[in-house]
Figure (cartoon, rainbow, N blue to C red):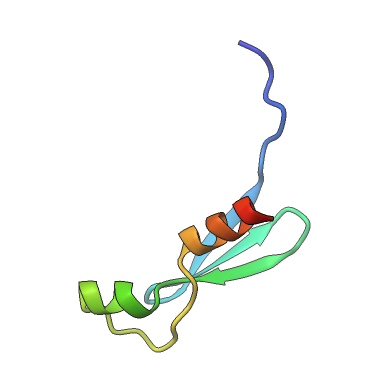
Length: 63
């Protein structure tokens, strides 16, 4: 098996409820959680609507 080409290094911590904050190796911070249809479907009540982690994946794929 070959050596990995790239290893992502990030930490994720819980801020409150469904709110999570990821910190990338370069210091960039990204907040994520739940919003709209997901909240309604699972009957989640949260103080702040935030993008889902998959929203960032879709955006990165388009980038």
